[in-house]
Amino acid sequence: MIVANLIAKKRDGHAMTEPEIQFLIAGYCQGTVADYQMSAFAMAVCLRGMNDQECAWLTRSMFESGQQLSRTVSDEMPRVDKHSSGGLGDKVSLILAPWLACCGVHVPMISGRGLGLTGGTLDKLESIPGFQVDLNDAQSDQVLTIAGATIIAANETVAPADRRLYALRDVTATVESIGLITASILSKKLAANLDALVMDVKYGDAAFMKTFQDARELASRLCSVGAAAGLPTKAVLSDMNQPLGQAVGNAIEVNESAQLMRGEGFHGSGFNAPALDRLYRLTRYLAATSLLQVGVETNRSQAEARLDAHLASGEVMERFCMMVDAQGGQAKFPLSVAPALTLTAKQHGSVQSINCAAIGQAIIGLGGGRRQVGDAIDHSVGITMHVGIGDQVHPGDPTLTLHAPVALHSEYASQLQQAVRLCDQPIETPPLFQDLESTTVPS
Image 1 (cartoon, rainbow, N blue to C red):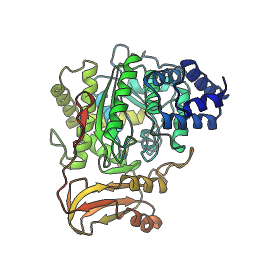
Image 2: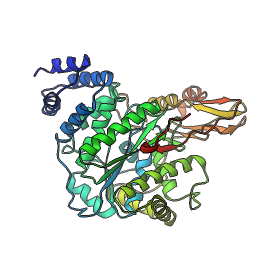
Image 3: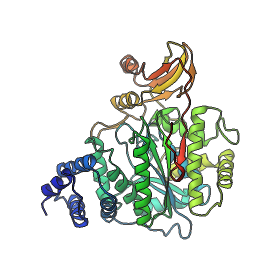
Image 4: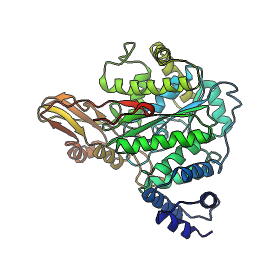
């Protein structure tokens, strides 16, 4: 087979065969398919799409490029995981992994770095001094034994084809592809040897999937391909027309996660701060779904009550610190962040929308994200949102706080001053999430 011919076939909108996909992936791992050729193939897939069968073959080929993790340390204990399709301020994984570990399941989470405007779980965790994400199988098993949860990068034995392609997609504008997203996620999750997977598929301005319809298509594809591969997969669709929680960045998101895990402002069934409560409610729902999938609990109310009890007792933060310690990190929070500059509203009004692209681009410009593969990350920069869609604001009310080097405050303040758009009419807050199985198109 000739690589250029296969790229042209997909470019022209034709379905590929299993041997053709296997040839491309094997060649990419062996070095006979170059980065520029795989980039061209990824762009062709992004523009032309893949059918379900092609997607299943790509997932299988990427999974089989490496090895599957051993279940030895888990034995009969359920192994579960959650994955997000990506959104601005999405720090759910940091909270969910130790929270589930409190409930008697193992969470061997293989995560990624930032793609596009959204930060990666690994980048956030690496803002913790000493935290190691590159662990071999024996080391990750040791962390799993100690803490019940581990969050690591895919090493050279876990879907190595995806590890290389993942980095290319971030810098070649090929992130927003249902086929590539599905294969990337599921190849790693199959390698983790799980009993169940729950997907948080996001839609809106702060997500890769901009429309509800595209998110539902991705969720359906993930569930069908996962089931075909023997991995029971459930999906939740969540609104991302605004950042999740208040914090957007790396260290600043770890700090917000620690605030939730410590239960600051928790009153038994929610949080006093609206933004933190949204983060809590989505994370709890995803965690409860995982417990139901593997039969640890048999109904949602019991699962959520159990999760709330662990949160109220302080055990979730304790478990997170155990994981951080076991992965070489210094569990001392809050982490330091860059100097703050707070912007305020200039008029009365309701928050109609938040310019998520402007926020994400500002963080990348400040060094909190990557423009090219290998770019160093400044973990200290970020943005704290003080308002959400539907909030009423008055002149002088804080809208957002920029965390950045003082020399850059003026430049980025002018960019962000219009990021919060106000209107004269009351704005209804959109629903936070809904199950794929019972989805209705939001009004």
